[in-house]
Image: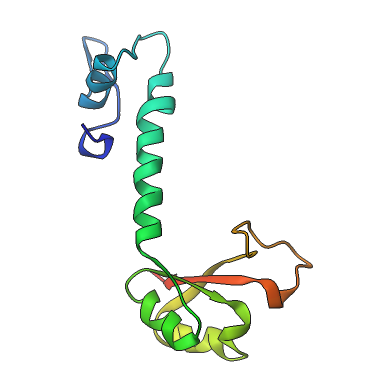
Length: 128
C-alpha cells in the first residue's frame, strides 16, 4: 500500500487510541510499537520523500533558452543556465507569473555567495 494513499498520523485521545492505515501497514511489515514513532520517520516518511522526489523530477525540464523556461515553467519546473536568462530574463519571467525559485551549481547543490554566475543554473516555476 502506498503511503500517500493512507493517513500518516497516529491519532490518540484520552479515551482510546486509534491507529491510522499507515501505522497498520507498517505493523504488517514488522515495524511497530507505541514506545517509538520511528516507523513514521523511517518508513512512511521515506516513502513520501521518494514519491515527492519522483513527482518533482517528472515535472522538471532541462531547457536552454528563456522562452523554453517560460513554456516549461507554466506547467512545472525548468532548469536553465542563469546566463541564458539574459539581463531582462527575470522581468520576462515575471510577466508570465514565473519566478526564479533557487540557484544551483551544476552538481545540483545550492549556490553560495561568490559562485561564478556563468556556472549557475536557475530553477524557475510559477509563482503562487
